[in-house]
Length: 68
Image (cartoon, rainbow, N blue to C red; front, top):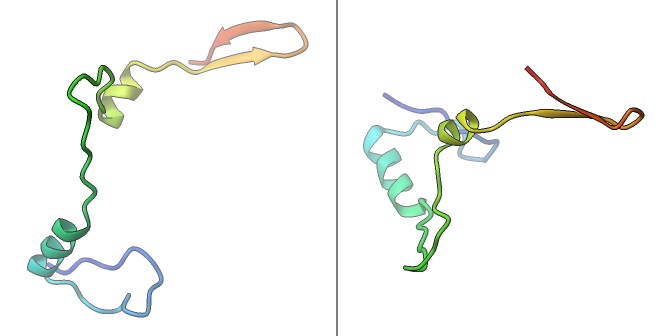
């Protein structure tokens, strides 16, 4: 399966084979090195959103309410 390029690049019409895509991802994937005493570790977007709430502040009345 070939994957389309994600941006407008001169090579954006070039088809990517699965093997080539895996090679490029392996070469350019960022590596995150954390300090061994780091307390705040990365989380997934899903984990973060499940534990998040959206709040609305009415500047005129100074009322705070949760958006559902």
